[in-house]
Image (cartoon, rainbow over all chains, first blue to last red):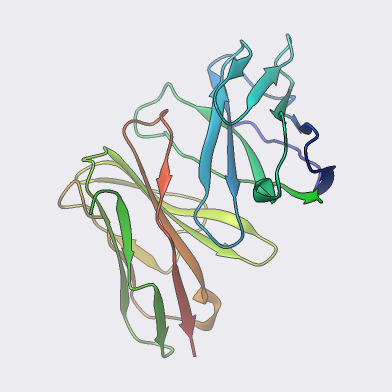
Length: 113
Length: 112
């Protein structure tokens, strides 16, 4: 699986859009980009994933660059409850028995009141 | 209750003892995962399973044993616990290898 690089921490004002970047310059054609978050000491929570097209759901939007070497997770109107560690994960899906889900160290996002 | 549950939530054990952490999911998800989380290390994959009777090593498998005789259960055993295995352990499951994974609430294990 390709490695990802994320800033260790970010702040965002409450009510503003939080834009979390992720670099995955070694991504290959069959690898998806996933985002999870972990609030305090809870188990991680799935947010969104995509291959090449931009994706949006009720929680967030995922913007993937045309060359797929980087992506941005957007929380459109951040609230205090969005304070968490956000993990960007690149994952190979094509090989049965090799469908690992491995996490990096993530970005600690703090929403400022 | 539907979902994924881990037991116990908290466990203190002594060095050298065998301890088993349980993970049970009610969705019949094919995939299950075990992670450990230590301060400064994020989540590290210990073992995962693509289906009953199919398991594979993750990043940090040494000192751990898993089994998956039934789809819904994925126990993690520390055969001879060491202090370095003090950690928070998370179990997760997913329908397939590429669908979202659902995590349990974690087991905080302390080895003294």
